[in-house]
Length: 479
Image 1 (tube, rainbow, N blue to C red):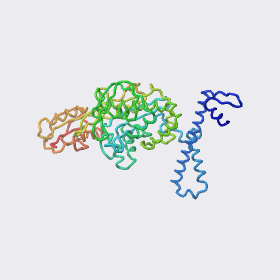
Image 2 (cartoon, rainbow, N blue to C red; image 1 turned 135 degrees about the horizontal axis):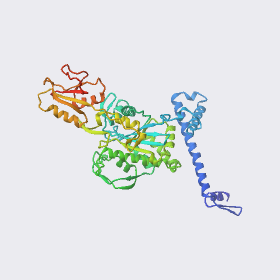
Image 3 (tube, rainbow, N blue to C red; image 1 turned 60 degrees about the vertical axis):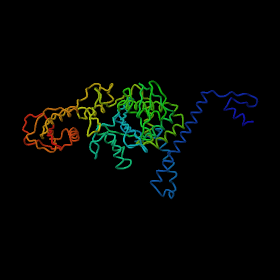
């Protein structure tokens, strides 16, 4: 009888000695649930840390069985790690990388992964930055066709950096991609996060989907399916609750109509999904759901490669959950009239280069991104890219070759300061004479690729111009 009454106590009240006791108030019941959940999470985290510490000790000491105090040490390490999560122990690790400088930079990479054509090519590249003092976030989307120098591989599209690193050594892809982005934008990249398509879908599904506002309707007839064919997709203007598969299609679509076919439009859609994920994870209901937390941890382990430590993820998530939507800056590098890039072709391949063929604008934009106001730097003008002055001379008997080449270079944002014929018309190989003493090496490399030319770091003896304003002298050959 007592057992029945005890069960009733947690249902609709109970009788004891003939007296009816009503159920406890919901508010108190909710407090109990939170209390027991907190205990559960504490046990879970403690067990996890003890296990990881035990694993670390096993790796470091293969003969740990012979040490009588190894288990005690393992449990002690578990307590230490658990305590550091809660901030009970002050350690050097309490500071995130970049936190003391008031700017934390994270490189976000998305790619197909196993089973996808070009699975190690970066489909998505975003620099996410966080300013702790002002609770500001910026998202800078980099188009995958941006043409940049990659260490030991020359000038290539930026989305190849991860693939080259992985080909060299498994696990080196994120490092090479991080170093490449850091050098191009002249900012430190403290962390990287690389997620494959399957992980992207599972994370969203385990969070219960994301709510996305589709700004304009569009249809993509050439969305790739799993069999190297096409699977048409369509999105209607308005709010939509997207599962993982649907969100991936929204993020990846590249051939949509209604001005949604560009990589720049795609980058904006990807930033929307990131914001929806941030909102989902910031919801306190998520942190009160151990099942979702466990599923997310499994997704992170199986499909995400990152240099974040567990405590760093927890601390950053805690910091980001209070960021106001109005304090999030969205910037997408583009080739539009007000954009930072221009499009051109190199050996038949579509590429993007910075206007003026100089990365100064991109470096300034990245450095001053938290003074940004709708894409413009507040308080000071961005330094204009350095112009590159070129003189083109025809070293062959082919009529009009210099004018034709100069026109092409002008379209690619080089400044032409002279056109004419070389003293001799017997050049077999195109030569670029660097007159800047290696001061514009990036522009020189671009010209070298575009013209398949030979580079010489001194002017020819017959070039007697005084007060010359040329940075480079190009003598065209018959090749």
